[in-house]
Image (cartoon, rainbow, N blue to C red; front, side):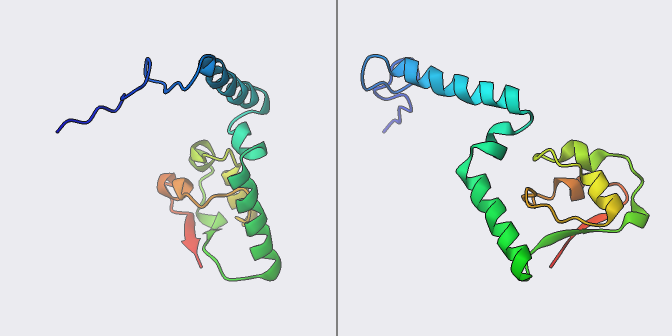
Length: 127
């Protein structure tokens, strides 16, 4: 028994009719152009419906003060190296959030990248 991952595809893209490449390329161009104009993760910040739902959920959780996993920081331990901000996939200024002692940001996806790169362990998960 063999598996052919490109079964019934032409050049690696499944095409049901003529012109399918145009639709595919327009979608790629739209996402690329949007990312170039809106900046780092611009498509995710302004267009992706999942990001919007996550941001609304985070704001509702904060409004009603429901317990949830979140980030907390100890500004006294921070060495201001900036690694946390550089590693944040959402492009947040994590170092300034640590400096202020307020880690609440609706766009934070709680990935933990900032925790992993912090040499002084100033950032941690809390509940």
